[in-house]
Image (tube, rainbow, N blue to C red; front, side):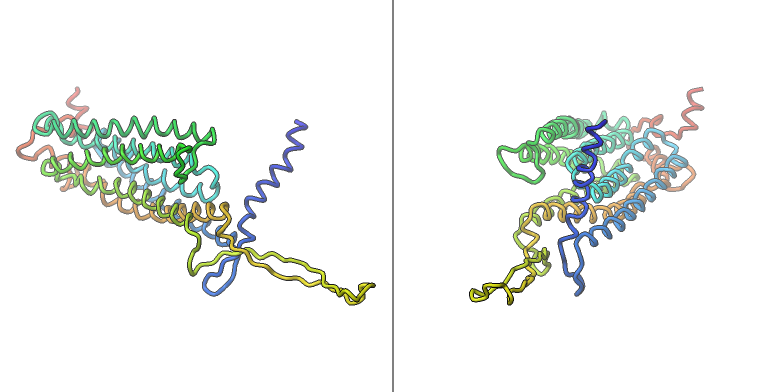
Length: 358
């Protein structure tokens, strides 16, 4: 206990140094000079509110599905897919507050991406019914293989390996060094993810006519765009951190240098005086500043992107598609679609399934 009491002031001093590390950095915005720490605090507040809005929109959509979606297995898949937005939004909001936990959060997010793709494949197979065992058997098997390897390699193996390497200090995000684990994990994720997305595109291309009532391409694009935009954003941030200058935007640190001026003939120091000079240094040359600015900017943009994707999910995963009371119910249209051999129990409303079981 005594050791903890002695260490407490040191820990508080370290936390204060981290929180105030950007206060000494100055930036000129809209003709006014302000501290980067103040700008970062405003970004935290605005970004957190945007993340909360995205979570609220998605929570409303999930609640409506739980009330009106009469197809339990389809409903379960959709709700798990919709949770992708709150996970990304909360990840970005936490990243604005705690930049040091970026790597574990990104690994958890990547693992959930694989799980979401698996849920989407499950929903497609449920909607196909017996057709997945007939004329579309080949593309379904290809999709299962592609998504399965993505879940195993990226969702499990790559996540655990990268986390273990990060704990050992051998994983640094964005560092393409042969001695670091990051480039190997990045190559594995890129290859595995490309295979999975290619197999899903082949599946949707081969089954688009049978699945037309549920608009599978739009639903898949919502997932793919989130993965694609976050990947592009990560690459852009890494490129930003690697540049030597921000162009018209300048970040600098002002330090006061006190100098004593004296004359050789003034033996008694009567005419001696002190002069204070303000020296500017480029803050972008400091690695810590580049990492904090890059991480904060990426999380801030991601908060607003999730608001847009939450609204897009409301349109892509409409509750009316699975509500038997609505005329455009996709479940009823899929069951009545001519030329298909759908497995009816999987697409019957929950109430009718219970009556049939009696």
